[in-house]
Length: 211
Image (cartoon, rainbow, N blue to C red; front, side):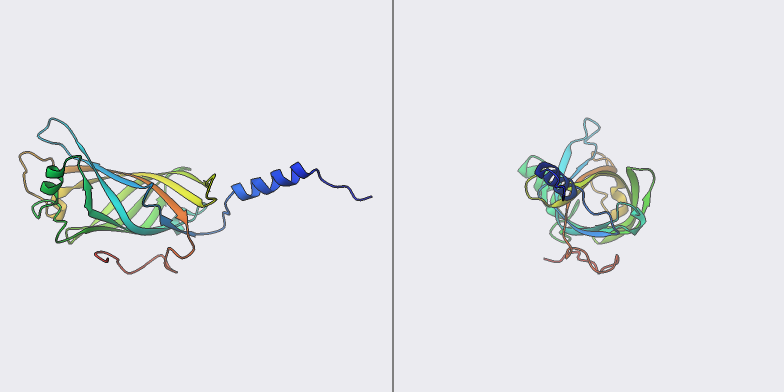
C-alpha cells in the first residue's frame, strides 16, 4: 500500500522552498530606487548637521551570499534629486560652487573589490566620481537580509552602508567658514533580483552622465 503525505505537509514544504532563495554563486540585482535612499549631513556653522536626501537613478549589483569577494556594484546618484527640505536651500547647494548639478548631474560609484569582515559586515573598496573628480572611497556596509517579499515574490537583498567624504577632495571648497569639510553619507539599499541587471562580468563601462 502506498503511503501519502498529508496535503498540509506538502504545502508547507513548498512554501519553505519558495521562501529560501538559492545560494549558488553570484546573482544579479537591480537597485529598488523607491525603497533605496541616500542621505548625507554636514555641519552648518557648527550649530547642527542637517540632513539632505538624494535618489539613486540607476544601478546594479552582483551579490554572492557565500563568497562576498565575488560581489560587485555600480550606480549613479542623481544630484538633481537633492532634497534639503527647502527649495531655496536646494538651489543654493546645486549651484556650481557646491554640487554643480547642471555641469555634473550624476555622482558615479563603481566597486573595485568587496571585503567581508564578519558574518554581516564588509567593506566595498571603490571609486566615486563627483563633479568630474574621481577618488578612491571605502564604504563599510551591513548585510541585512536576503529573502523573497511577501507579496511580489521578488527576491530582495538589503544593505545599510556609511561613508565619510572630504568635500575638498572633489573640488568643493566654497563657504569654508560656514560649511564643514567632512560629509557623512548613509545609504539604505534594497536590490531586486534581476538576471539582466548586471553585466556578464564584474567590470563594466561607466554610465556616468548617461540619460
